[in-house]
Length: 248
Image (tube, rainbow, N blue to C red; front, side):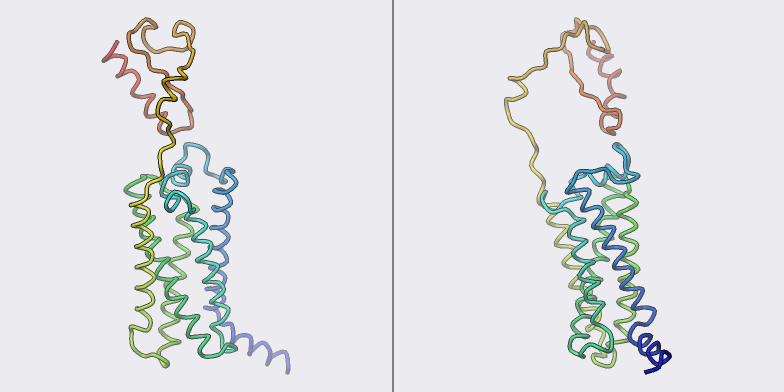
């Protein structure tokens, strides 16, 4: 076989859209693995310092499912499945394998679309903060979903001309992402608190020696452990003067 013939065969087996689907799957997989490594190792994510909007998203309860499974780990598995399926949709695979791979990719496309919508809603209206890594992964996922649906419609139209062959698996995937959202809402991580510990281990701090706002002889004294990078601590700091004015 000549080099020209070999190149033409490769082009037929790997058209530009197939390269795009596989390439975008790899990028989304790497981003998800990076965020998963951050969760497992506890290391900081580049550009997401403590107190930043990105850190607020990654450290929130919504970054996990049921308080145990990291969303990034689940996303890595989804994009790995997308990448694997994309390797079996070419003409070198049997027709039954191609059809099964396309259906799997359509289900994943629905999952990715539903998840992107859910987590964008959470960041916009619940957390009021955005994670650039998360949004980049969602954008790649949506682009993947669009490409998969369009190419599946063209590829599967002869084998199964009805629309349900394409939209059915997508709807199943979106329903699965809806179940994940319901699990996140229903299952809240337990609060790390042991009743009685705070009463038996009071801090030994002299109000006359420690930094203090207000009178050291006041009847009520509140001890505040403060981190300048913590957004919640910053909000409490703004409330201190009002508390002193009201109770001093």
